[in-house]
Image (cartoon, rainbow, N blue to C red; front, side, top):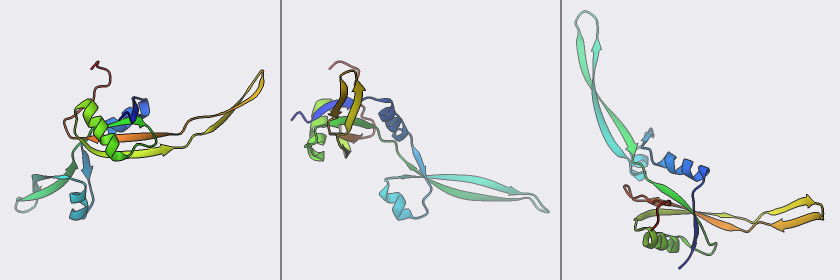
Length: 146
């Protein structure tokens, strides 16, 4: 084990977490597309009144599809770790149920800077980032002592 290097608690990762922790309204026309996204159907009824010679009232039904919120958290992991290993380790460390793991590989970047001693060249390490989607209701508290 030991594939997780550190949790990602940055402003950018917090924005991703907050964006996914809000229910989303889906507007796709195809029912099959909506079912793939695990959306929940909500039914609304409302009354339309027309003024004219005889007041007419008509009841209409509107369907709205809402994708439930899913908490997401980011981790920096070792580049050789795969999704199954990341999932198992997070479930063991934080006692949560992991639904999905998305990984992103970052290449090491060359850097140089000018100093009194002359040009100093170096390279940043390559790393891998994992974004983990948890079951609804599960949370990870990075700031508490376990």
